[in-house]
Figure (cartoon, helix red, strand yellow):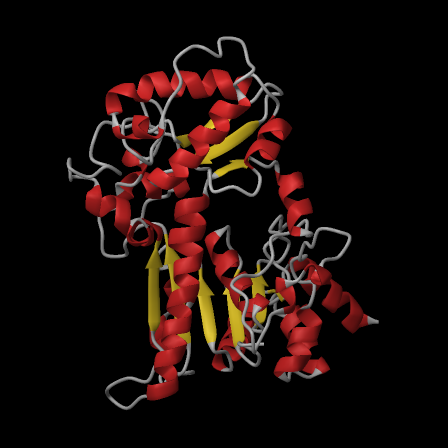
Length: 400
């Protein structure tokens, strides 16, 4: 696999951090997640990873973390700015200094994912995807009603602007290291990442001549304003997506849609033609026609009408339906690489049960791999490196 041999240490977090680690793990990286002792994880972005439970607030736990990171290629920091620095694991610990003092690992890629820009006024505030999306300027131009925009769950900021941008930053830093031999800090914040991900709409947002954005929400080409780029309800309550933006695709749609409704009640009423697309004044009439038309038949009927055509009409699949089409209940690793393919890119990698990585599941295994002896592992346990429960257990064993 493309990243075989790459060692990654991921501090446990939510959404963007685990996703960045997942992307690396799916392409061969060895990813160790550091969890807090006694924590409970519901993170399902963990296939291909291992977990060690460490209390880095103890000298023993901190020493183990430093040992892991001294031999690692990548660190993924999901915390607010300053958290790892206070723990004693800031970038300055790892990088060589100009005064000649050597760091623990000058080749380390130190990847930070934060919500807000680290040098901005909101850097220490709490937030979630909807807040980062709001501050980026992107939420204000998303579809919705005239009263307020709608948000697409937590996809854009958490996973696009956060996790994926961080993974890309790590890969860029690795390419740079192959030339310089030195690691560097990768700063990925979800506000800036969302803005970069949304370059196209943001550049057009203030351009009133743009057909895509610039007008009042719900009147633009891509935000539900155009009746030929929207979602419609069918007779069975399911939906179809319509995206025939180009004139030739709209012409195909009109031809097939009109013909499908030819025998319906009111066949002699107004019907659109290919030229209808060009006249905004006719869009309300076209939308009403399309809404009534799609509601007259079930989704399966419309699938058959448009199947194999360039009308750009496709069903809105439920997650279970999409999984069946993809032959996989889990999303597969993507993109596919021809020479160094990922086994996570094929349905065969799946197990019958959802994969949940229990905190500390591989603690002893990881400690052995790093080179700690059994005696050292017991001493670390007695010193609280793995939490109070492990400490008490180690003390009890030492008395037997």
